[in-house]
Image (tube, rainbow, N blue to C red; front, side, top):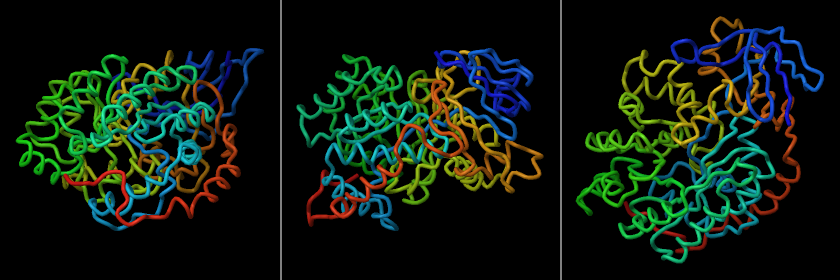
Length: 444
């Protein structure tokens, strides 16, 4: 049992209207992995309590990275300033052919450590060799929703193996791991494969995590080749009939928004603004999606495209890019941007009753940000500081389920030096690209 008291912090919490605001000088009590109370400071500690000093700290819900490829951190910096087609065909799908499960395990350790250090406590990962990622999550103490990437080109047996992984790790790591089926996209999976994915997901009792309509050229190519947009393909094959997380969605047509709105009860969108900007994909219509009450979360996608897993940076880019896209500084105000990074991501993953909010009954996934940096002063508006100024280096303490994973910037569950050594040892081999060798060919 965890008995913990965080004393004297400011806290990002829903106000009386449900909008996020900052409650100053709060005590947060945690028992048995969950938040039991938030109240003005002065709560006397009980004899069994571990007390954390929260003064000059801002407590926020653990951030939710709604779409990532965690072990892709192994390829950071190897595919820069190239088109989407070259990014896939000349670099990433060639490099990923070098991976072994042990590589993925160490890459996941590095990626999870970077996320912990930047306040991310939950991640939806769409990758290969997912048993290695699950092992890393179990040891790191974080929360994750994991799906093993599949393509039509790998055949039914490979798809069955990915479903077996989803069954094997469903509810794993003491409930911190949930799973999904993870077909890569409609342009790498034909209709028959997508229908088979739906059958497996229904049998195992899990959802689906898929890339779709990443950018408008994909949507136009699908309409030309298949007579349907990618989202219509998902509708026709039954994907939208089960809980589905769609990554990117920068190429949505008006009819796609209508389809998604009809399935809003179990469809979520993960928008990765830095990857969208860096690869020139175009932005997801976040404002229209939220207006249609479709859950939208914030993601990073691959470190080979995004370069980092810093969700605070992604939060800032989300707010700024939506204002730039609309040519209107009043759209997506601070509270809405923060909602996407916390409650929105949790809802998109189907975890909204468990994580993403500092409230009694929710999991004690809590991040304490140090407010002593000069960029926080004068502290007129902590919401503005959080959206427009906060840095990963402000993350002081991270808890998942009441367990402290990071304290005073020091990781407690991952051996950082060992991870850096193991990753460094693999660098040269993993960076090799064999001419013509790739897992898959990108052709939208």
